[in-house]
Length: 192
Image (cartoon, rainbow, N blue to C red; front, side, top):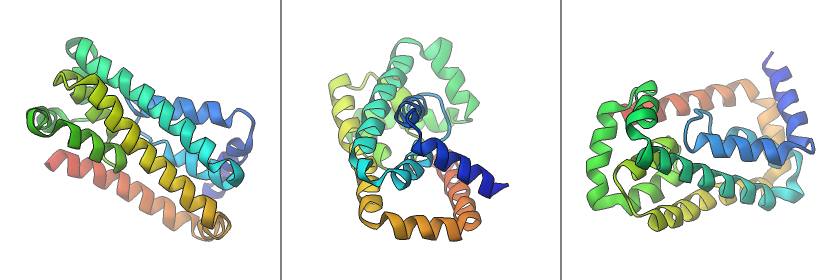
């Protein structure tokens, strides 16, 4: 079954609508969606290695645009929408600690979270709630999200075929590791 899903994602990643799907995933992940865009970006770059950096640009721009939506949710809709999203993910206590940290470390929080597997949507909403500078937020997001997506694109551009062969040989193991990393990210956030 996992192989069928992988093959379907690879076909979708090679399709002409793939950039739009990636853009939608990257946009939604930055404010409400739980799956990181890397899950679609990686097969897309493997399917289209010559377009690796254009794909990274789509992911970056869409992610930052989605981050601005997350910021707006926090800034304008905290009581009606933002609180419900944070509660849905079970981040209430962590969110309050993060909010307090913004006063001192806001720029670094956005920059680090944008690059790491930390759930970026929490930071986008927290940035709005904390009233963090919107230009500072956008700049830190562009740098960190761009660095993350362009690094993935560069690695796959240079070592794409060996990476693809490795992924196809060890699909089950890598899927399990990805799920564990995703769960670990949520657990770390819960206990920070």
